[in-house]
Length: 232
Image 1: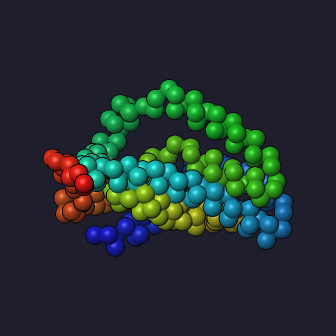
Image 2: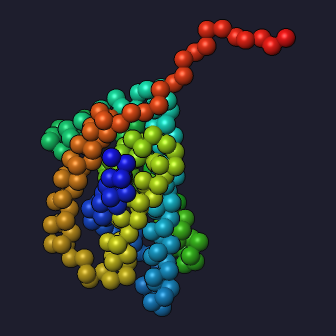
């Protein structure tokens, strides 16, 4: 079951990258690198997308840490099954869940501030500015990123969650690099065809989470000692 993780993470990244092109494409197209040399363009786009992957990995470490805590409490298998069923429900009834699920007000305000910072860094032409821009963009809400984060929590460890999300970020890079360097290659028709695979991948991830919760044995907490030995 564990060997499925790298393939699942990269596959989720590859498929969701075409969603990224639609959502984050304008930012990639606005990067101040298109008048630079080809080497500078490639470096800028790579660093920008590396910043996104870095943010994903940091979020993965946080969610993986939560997963490790749930595993220690003996609850991760139930959380894994619950999240998997929720992902399958989203595939079957997306419109119904979209009407009922809304971001908290504080999170909406936080995202607004992040977008303001992104506007500031879009004016920077140095590579460090593009790194920060990519890191900020990685924090902008995205349904597929949330799905990947939920999957990363099922690894049951901080580093496992970080590695899962880093691989997810790596999977998003080909389409984003193509958009940033060879924009004409990603036609709207191609993006639409590949985006239709997104529900299929979400369903596969949901089934994997349910199966992992049912079949994987996680460590259980040690029993609380009933007596204390005093050395004399």
